[in-house]
Image 1: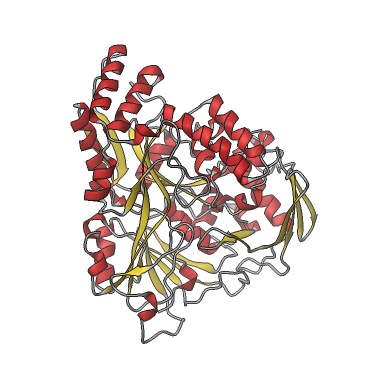
Image 2 (image 1 turned 120 degrees about the vertical axis):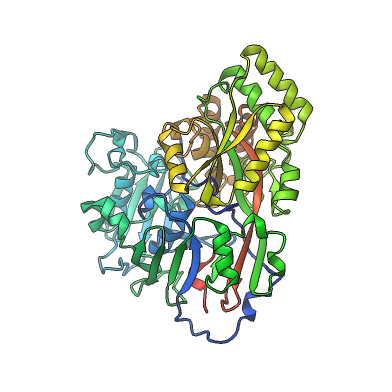
Length: 548
């Protein structure tokens, strides 16, 4: 049984670079602690977002816009520090047996949803079974393949109430989890958004619930004005490690980052988690804001679908490599991104254990126009190229400048017609990717919901996560890759797993289901009236800490 993970797919870079960091320092406009006056901890803070791609349902969230909100409304068994260390939240303990094939989870006492409903082991068992059951159509389902009984729930027309056989409720506070195979990373994996618990009211009408969710996190839902704002208030029932320090959070939903940045500098937005490309050269010197910049674990790439014309078989292998050689990553990072990213050398990120600069075959990530033309000509000998190479993205993502730079680099290096292919909104773009109607290459960013190397590799490339069953949106399938991931999952230490992860990445460098681009910094700003600005392991603000 293959062990799958879930990844937060920042399709088309929901927030421009939309990248993560493991910590943050202030530059330019001054440190966050310098803000003075009017700080009482009871005021609502305003932060940026875009319209979520779907309802606010944890197990159906696969975009960063939704992730931001859902993770404030819900709490799971564990959370993570800003540097990736595991912290117990709803769990009091998570204990494996001798070979990590079974785990005993003990919940803290007195857990409740914001409406007063008690949270028990049965709550978690039912939530996970609902998410895993194909009949319920949840996009995060594939991660539950780790648990015994997952395969039996993969009938889209089956019983929607069927439960995972690997879950045993011992008592109100104790859940025993039997896995399909040993997995020493399971205690990290339950930090994924899909593992968050649902109240009983969710199952009455899950679509309606997604519009007005009831959670157990540091905040509770107030209102959602679509394409306008989402308001959250502190949850007085919450007793976990992320207690709200402010009077609430309002997510202002923007259609472009320039408007958000204008609001920030005008004092109409408290925190902006991504600076638009147009301001990257100047924002650190903007006197009206605090500025932040720090490297982090965000991976940026673009996907070439496995069934795209001219990109299958040996012809496709040659063209994929040619396209990769044709992208001048160093120049784009320097000139367009203003040095706020690092050119990729693997498929994870520098802040993740196992990151490598020396994988065999990584030379394909270097710019070489002559090599690109040579490989393209070899592919033409198999089947002459016709048409246009298109690279899709969402217009509200702030990605236009660097997407244009990529297609121009490809056009100039190979001598073909290459064009940007914008979709009006992230929602439109995500729908085309998910429905497999996009008929083009498309930009995609990955950030693991939990800080472990498999969070970058498994769900994005595992065969079982293709065909809409996970986040393998290019539908890449390789038995050799799957076997290497299986071996990594069997290891009882991270170092043991990394050896197999590296082999799997070297195979990806040959097949190139995605074209790696770069790892990005968080480039953020905050009003000078805000203090205690810090960023989590996903590179997003620690919303509960913000005070003004």
